Image 1 (cartoon, rainbow, N blue to C red):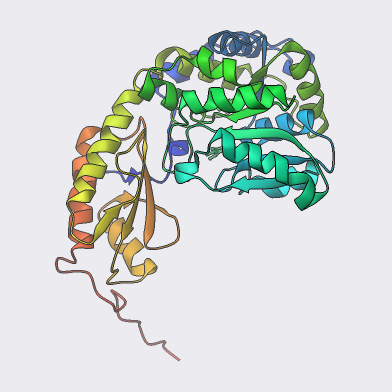
Image 2 (cartoon, helix red, strand yellow; image 1 turned 60 degrees about the horizontal axis):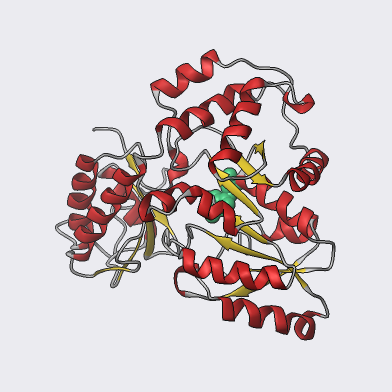
Amino acid sequence: MSPAIDLRSDTVTLPTPGMRKAMARAKVGDSRRGEDPSVRALEEHAASLFGKEAGMFLPSGTMGNLCAVAVWTRPGDVIVASSASHIAGRESPAVSHMASVAIIGIDGPGGVFTREEVASAIALAPRRTESKVRLVTVENTHNAGGGTVFPLKELKRIRAMCGKASIPLHMDGSRIFNASVATGVSLASYGKVSNSLMFCLSKGLGAPVGSVLIGSRDFLKEARGVSLRIGGGMRQAGIVAAGGLYALKNHVERLAEDHENARKLAAGLGEIPGVVVINAPVDTNIVLFRWKMPSMGLPAFRELLGEHGVLLDDRGFPLFRAVTHLGVGEKDISRVLRALREVFSGDGSASLYPRRLPQPSAS
Ligand SMILES: Cc1ncc(COP(=O)(O)O)c(C=O)c1O
């Protein structure tokens, strides 16, 4: 059988041959001492793309967000985030433990919220928590919301209001390049509305490791201190940074193909009876969909899908996420749709019962 088509996430991407070459040739040094030329080149390039003064290469997006929260807040403070955001979800134990802040979540369609909702969260925080909001975070694009782009107009309104209240705005821009390619909004515009911004190299951009946190020189000086205290200091990290720099120079425009493939996938899924696409029209590279009346349980479904060579992200069966990326081509989308049509419409193989009869034990 041909290799599996892995739509679980854009983090499953493998380095391309050109990227591997760039990594093999990378000049390196002790990055913790600021002596790795490839890390420095990546940080400078990243900062300049967003019109910011400085950047810091980090092992993960989680660490980038944590450093930003720790710099902008003090223990006991409150931060505002979308309720379904990565910061308020998977990262919340780390953020609450290591930065000792509480999170007020805002529910909004696709993870997007308005200036008025932020203003009301800021006003209510002292009554609800006896503490003040010291940081507002936005996730752009929003992962759990279905790759939703946060509209620039609303970001500007939120930033203007936060600016008046002296509250910084941090953008979790793990997939900010998807947002920029989808809308044509420049990276500099996203940089301008944020006091700090983190983006990931290891998602749709296809690099094996790393994220970059950017902001002013003063902010980065503090953030570097936090990252070192939590073990983020790296040595000859230029080998992986070179992969990231290659991605920034070669893998950005092609994100439009991923968006096109996601739209094709959503359109095909929308035609399968019993399947509902939740985030149509799809903004970027993420499709969320639900199987309305499952005719089998998750283990049988997984097995059947596995036989077709398709991997999906289970978001609480029967809700799924499919993420397109540089390892998935147009032909793969047709193959996925053929498989899902068969599985969801129950042609032949769907059953309430386990697909294989249990074997009696010998004893
Ligand atoms: C929106 C968002 N923010 C942050 C992260 C964390 O990035 P990392 O896995 O590099 O820690 C992710 C990872 O999936 C994400 O989707």
